[in-house]
Image 1 (cartoon, rainbow, N blue to C red):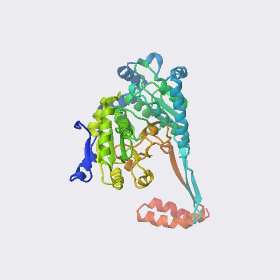
Image 2: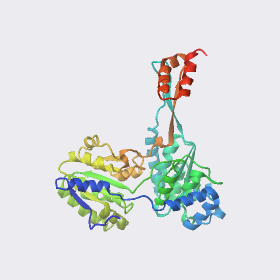
Image 3: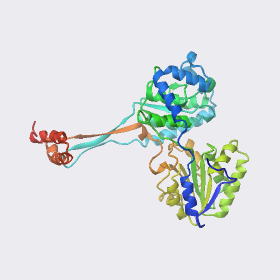
Image 4: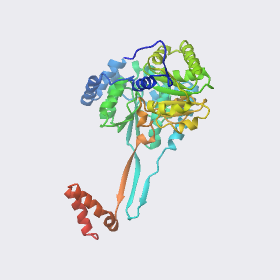
Length: 439
């Protein structure tokens, strides 16, 4: 368990021991493997065996909701009634965000590939959408309508025919903003279930819920563990860890701005991480003081304060040119480049989930209205993975087509390789055709 400090740790690249201290920061584990693996496995097995009845019993136990009378699936009038309670200003903001998210993701749609090479062989690849996707949406206090848009819109743009949403409704309460977001995203197949049991139902199906091909969306450690266990039966987006932000800022910034940016992720979770890298020691002091002032007023100050003191860091470097190498070792989920010439530094950064360029582009824009997806790799996984996109809801199928001449041009080499690998039927399937090219 992380030690909670009185303040965020301070590192200076000019001091002895910096390399070891920075390596320890990068290696720090903020969320280990779930200790609930056995319980989650039991829930998944129970849902597989008993289907709806298991879902009803778990919902009564965990959400205080009796589903026998109302059913698992929300009725259209229930969705509409709850969505109608969403404040007009919030709904307008959701619609504004949805339009920007859709525009960005439509521009991601890939083109197919179809050509004939010099040997006369036709080659290519085509893209097809998944048939069905499941969107897990947290309910209760962790209800984020923006995540509904960020997960559902790429699936719809990709052409997924069936998008299913599951959301826990503790004591039967429907969150109006979530329902409004679902309406805006075009979702109408919504089930009032949550937790590992919802993931199990999406993966394996029940009498009321047909299974899907991929499950996306955030959740607590039970949901994350369930997604881990059903992977392979269905696809998943990722196993997301606690939120994180790295802000690279020079001394020309407003300390209060940078402090707010750091706390924008720290307030998510006590295991979240916020890091400042700066070439100005005086500015580092000013930001540290601004964070402490902000923590006196934030409604989520207990969570943000624990995150900052347990996992936060301020790193002073001698020159901004040192930053890209450090950034790539951290591979942050969110990276802000609050410097005079952000593009020059961005060109040297290889590993980050999403990057925000310039002093007037806070990460919070990306969470809501910028357009790119806010579902991003965490815990250093930006080294090898990317944020959610239309590609997550598409699959690529390659194809090849030969006539007799094309086979004669490339088949002999394939036959030789098959024989070299000792795969005689492979070689024979080629040889029979090569011997009778006009058949």
